[in-house]
Length: 372
Image 1 (cartoon, rainbow, N blue to C red):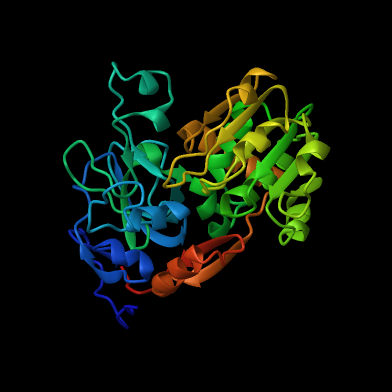
Image 2 (cartoon, rainbow, N blue to C red):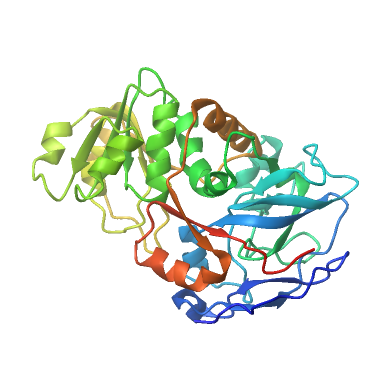
């Protein structure tokens, strides 16, 4: 594994190069990121430069580094749960961002906003087919996007958010992708009083599902996992009930038609999808947010027909939803379960993440590898 240099070069007043942990090929996912310079997007007057203090480690980082979801545009700097300080703000910046503000960026950094774009015209910019991801994407001018395993990030201001004072930076960071990925489908599908909600998978995404389902006021929150290893944690996170599918052979029968909404966070193509659907009440809704590299399991048509249940998907959230989520987290005292690691340990951290060691989200912390 490559180690960071003891000291990096001081940052010039006008950055033409950034420094960070760069993936050069598929092997980078095995702890082979290289610490080096790269060229950020071309500066525009609606941009913000952020001195990164924290960056969450997301499963998407691993999928991208190993080209699991398709060919990656190497070199690539991953990390799309970014929190830091605004150090340069363009004259046309939005969201009332000022130099010195504590701000964050999630998985999306731009959208086309074309009048003929149906998602953008409806305010659903996270579904824009020409959107720019915070890393491994391209902007309209051809510049590449680079993420937060780095010292600085340059991002269009429309997707830069002020972080509420009540949320510590290390907890805010993973909310910006992991949190919103489950918050959006919960909120859009009415999770709250009168609803019983199931969360499949108690990992980085799933733990946020439990926290936010409880914060939204769901009548009952049910954690669903293969084993009871994480049961104690799930109950502390807000689960009222726990189902261990590989430990109780009658789990389907005991819990049939009991849930209004299920949010599935797992990325395992072998999951018992048809059985999960049996847990839904009449006209219930199953929302998939985990993104396996292989196709989902086949299901019998009658799994949908008999009770009129539906299956859908959800991808991150809109800027408005992110702001709402952050405000709710501050108001309801929602705290992410995180483990911090120095940014210089990025290689070790992605290996540990792939091994399932996170409890429940790793967050990389910059410790002054360079100075302004």
